[in-house]
Length: 321
Image 1 (cartoon, rainbow, N blue to C red):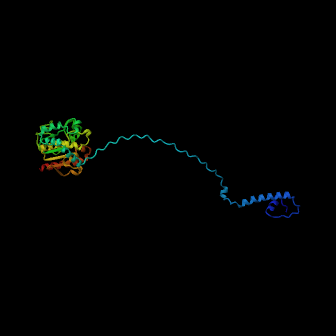
Image 2 (tube, rainbow, N blue to C red; image 1 turned 135 degrees about the horizontal axis):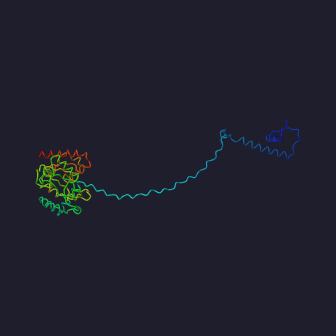
Image 3 (cartoon, rainbow, N blue to C red; image 1 turned 90 degrees about the vertical axis):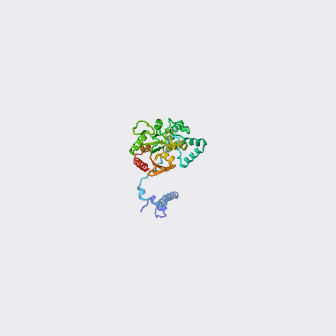
């Protein structure tokens, strides 16, 4: 077999000697051939030593590395303009009975005010009306249009005590007018009572009509608080002598109290009207029935049935005396 020069060089690099009758090559040519064969053998050995690549990897086309896209930071968004909040309205503190009683004691402790209360306790109807009209005992005198004395029979069997005059009462000078007054008149007619005499024309004489069928109506305050706010304890204390004198002059058989401030004034109680109604209380020995204010009933019509029950209780109590 004849061997090519290339094959000879590879076999020589692998240590296989070939016998050939041909003449030996010159030393320089032989050295070059040996060096070339050694280089090819080293390349083959490195290829054999490398780990075999999986077939799938060999067949899978090269995927270029993903190019990182720079993430752009979002532009800062300016916060929406904030509308300035309205200034908070200070809440009016709830006055407890203890605070109201202390205010009354402080008022009576003043010698001048105690003397004033003692003087009011001696007045007859005419002078009492004049004293109310001229009263400047508290700051309400500066904002009222006129005082609201009261209306009805001077010796009525029923006396109704409300809270404080409203805007229309301040204009007309009479308690319980407007829609609330109309509702009250309807309630009274339903149980055979009225603030007017039977003729119903204007403001009749205080002694006209049957006192058992007429009522006298008064408020705890004789002046309207500004914007119909709640009465202050000091205002109630300074106006109390007028109400006490009206009660002493009328001498009613029954007192019908309407509204929580009237309850505080006469019964000295902080309990809700819903807990006080339905039973008979006492004020200086006089039976007292508690019910809702007509202005409240106009806003809460379902409670009119409860108010009717209170009127029936008042009538039954008065009839039994």
